[in-house]
Amino acid sequence: MEFLFASIGLVILLLAGDLLVRGAVNSALRLGIPALIVSLTIVAFGTSAPELLISIKAIKDNAPGLALGNVVGSNTANILLVLGVPALMAGLATSKCDSRKSYVTMLGVTVVFIVGAFLGPITWVHGAVFLGILAVILGDQAREALAHRREVRALEASERVEIQEEELEGVDPEMRWWKISLFLVLGLIGLPLGADILVDSSLVIAKRYGVSDAVIGLTLVAVGTSLPELATTVMAALRKQADVALGNVIGSNMFNLLAIIGIASLFGTIPVERGFLVFDLWVMLGAAVILAPFVFSKTLNMTRFWGFVLTALYIGYVYWLVVSGG
Figure 1 (cartoon, rainbow, N blue to C red):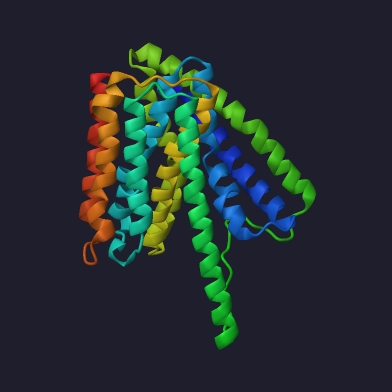
Figure 2: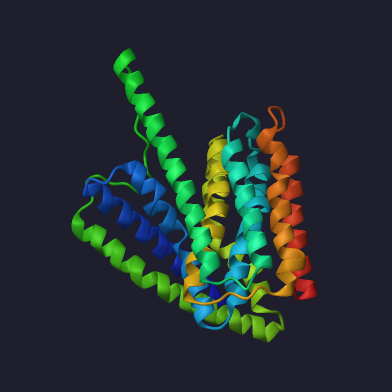
């Protein structure tokens, strides 16, 4: 029954998160906020709302290992599983992607986070530093996006060509305010409800099977909250959009470490268990380093073979966690 309740909580979380993003995006655009700003802020925060609510709930329930495990486990799953499965299905032409800058930034963020964990426990001071770094990254992304938009406008003016505006998923220019309001209300109600159910049932599972809340966070909760990224990446792989798949994972990993832990630490101190320091954080870093050849090489693609390797590595990691109890 606990697994059933955990599944129900996860479904509620994912549906509520999707409704909240749709409502927020459409309301912002109806109010005249540019799509660029919406994509850098509302969409980014909204899609991470499930992880954020779970982390805050876990800290309040005196299960901080679940909060930290959710983020660390999600980052590991994002690379080994969320990229591995789509590559196994259709392959990813990563050699054609230009994601070096964002990848190096993600790698730097991962190292900073690990250093912060070794200087733990993670307090509001760490959180303030993480959120400050996030603000700098978002500011730099906004600057580059605005510069690119100005170049596009100049090209349109000089060559009289029309370049299509970036489209945001879930946008309906004709959506009525009552429907937008309904999406927002259902999202705001569903997120804490789903988080409560998932966290409570996860803690029962951990107690019943004699594993720590950190292991549950690293496995069950981490995989569950990575499902939206997996769905997005699978569709990107099938559409031969390797840049979307890679960008989705890199952006999600940075946001998880900086925003989720940064905000969650404002609600309570997050102790870092020894298991994280000697194993899980290094697995997360190792998974990030594995991406380097695919990011920097102009000839190496993430073929089905490499998809199999990444997926197998993740299955082996989860098996070791479950068997060893973390």
